[in-house]
Length: 192
Image (cartoon, rainbow, N blue to C red; front, side, top):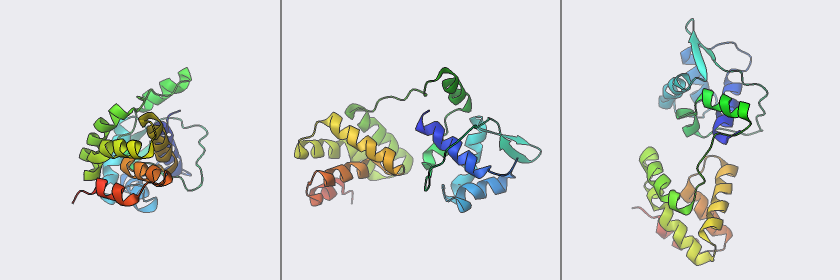
């Protein structure tokens, strides 16, 4: 099962644990104040996105699970990526992939797709450093002697490990592991 699906399943397991339904205000509070997964102003968007994607349903002024989550393992200290709650995968797509035994297909991120995803990330998060990710990747590859594919593999591993980390920060961590002078990386990421 993909991490996108697992994040939603884990979040819903935690939020709906011990209850058969929650009022909208309680559900929003759970996502923002109780669990601190999203900012308070984003909590309503999360509820609406989960409703629209078929994960939850509204009955008698309460929100309930619309899908059977089954056995869900939530590792200690886990938290979801906020984007996976704000733009969740469709519940029906996750059911279909579960029945076929496949995970929803995700494009393999290659160095050429990094620049496109970086621009998208910059637009979504407002982080100007995200635009510089491709440039930083080429710089790190050149300085460390790593192939771009190997560098991307290591960055992907960092993103999966830390969950809520930007790609440019993952590249900086790999550069640090390679013993590159961090002053050069900081200058490369300088947006002031």
